Image 1 (cartoon, rainbow, N blue to C red):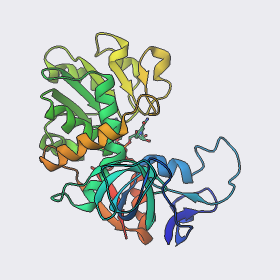
Image 2 (cartoon, helix red, strand yellow):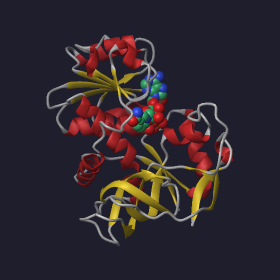
Image 3 (tube, rainbow, N blue to C red):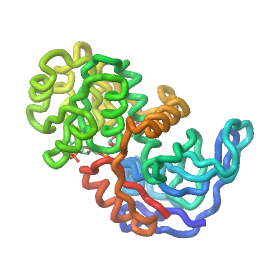
Image 4 (cartoon, rainbow, N blue to C red):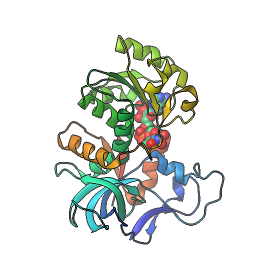
Length: 300
Ligand SMILES: NC(=O)c1ccc[n+]([C@@H]2O[C@H](COP(=O)([O-])OP(=O)(O)OC[C@H]3O[C@@H](n4cnc5c(N)ncnc54)[C@H](OP(=O)(O)O)[C@@H]3O)[C@@H](O)[C@H]2O)c1
């Protein structure tokens, strides 16, 4: 099979769509023939070497943390899914013709493959953030960075549970935020004042998806520091905010079921821009520039 890969750290030019060993599912996993796999910032943080801690590259690097496809192999102990089923979910090295998923849900038939692939990482991360913040009906939530992959899912997931959502984006994405059900504010200097003005009262929770606004400014919005959760500012914990990178606080199977249900009911709509795998470098240039609307998705 072919997979997106890199042999040295660098920019998107190091990526190659080339032969790779075919993966097989272990216990608790499923194997899929990939129909689409999304681009997440962690992918370019990986091939740029930013996550290597200064160590030189060894071996071949592969990319991709989510995908949608057709089950072609079921691992030991897995029930409720069979060869031939259409699924969406999360895994490793998913930007390939065949991949293994660790968590999944049935893909609603009305949902396009690219949209389904876009829901994995963004959906799990959004579910985790809203659960840690206990966002419920009637709460006012501020999502800092609401137009990107995680942000746009978090906004719609919160709206679906009848929370009131204020979200930030650049000038070009203000209409998009309104379209997905948020009150839009511009990010940058003075964003907390704009959120206070839009809220006209309390803000119960802040989900920092972008990691760009100074933590003190975001903390000024919430009643206690623990009501600020960040997925992108790893120093925010020093000021009392909660930082999450997944792992122990992740409930991936529940999250995949939730996003599949929201997609099926049209409560979650993910705007996608697709690229064939052999043009992945173009998608990564856009992702690295930091102003994605919705999600970038790679397709065979
Ligand atoms: N910890 C975890 O578990 C976890 C999981 C997933 C992702 N992440 C991290 O979370 C971050 C976001 O991921 P993503 O997939 O949502 O990225 P993305 O799709 O590339 O979206 C980035 C968004 O950031 C917005 N943005 C740019 N500058 C901003 C600013 N100054 N203030 C507020 N927002 C700003 C952009 O809005 P405009 O386009 O309007 O400029 C864009 O919509 C990445 O760093 C990623 O690695 C962490």
